[in-house]
Length: 283
Image (tube, rainbow, N blue to C red; front, side, top):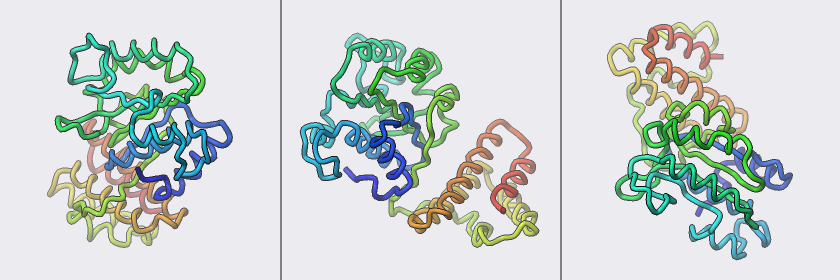
């Protein structure tokens, strides 16, 4: 299980939170690499439950349990994990699950409980949550618990895009973008020429940039154009992990594109969406 060293900002935030006892109790990870998010969630659970050296190499019982995914208080919650015995639902995190979680949390624990909400595909691989899997009825049944959880309880949600989550959950969580560290090349061929050097563009060049992106969106699906813009920026992130100032800018740009995606899905005027996005990207 990889440690947080690949994510300096997250490392500092969560290490400081654990050491100060001021960790957020409701966390949302988003980004394309759900496996990395899941491993981060397990590492945070390990940090919260460690009774040994408090180092990544610690071999205490709690740390070993979590590495082996056998800890009694660190649970994966999905449409197939940790369901009541009489719950036959297989496509959603159910209301019955939500009620079982609430009842289980009424019992005190000597551990720091960490509940990791995600999805699984048919082969058992971890996948990101969406509103089809984690629907409003089950989410709403847990909202009060998310707001005021029992002591030593942390909820972590994994998703590709914040817009895939019900807004009432997003509003109660501290959100963190987790860039992919995979070596596989994701396509940004449509937007490469337009995006190359965008960080050096000046304000007076924003309309030229806007026209290039708009022209591409007219020839291709706008959703795909936005996805490839995200892929391009994620490639810059992977190449600049040690440059904190640039990382902050790139993560802000990813959030701006995410917002543009949401506006596009609401059938807003694509010209207006891209123009607004262009002004956010070109400082």
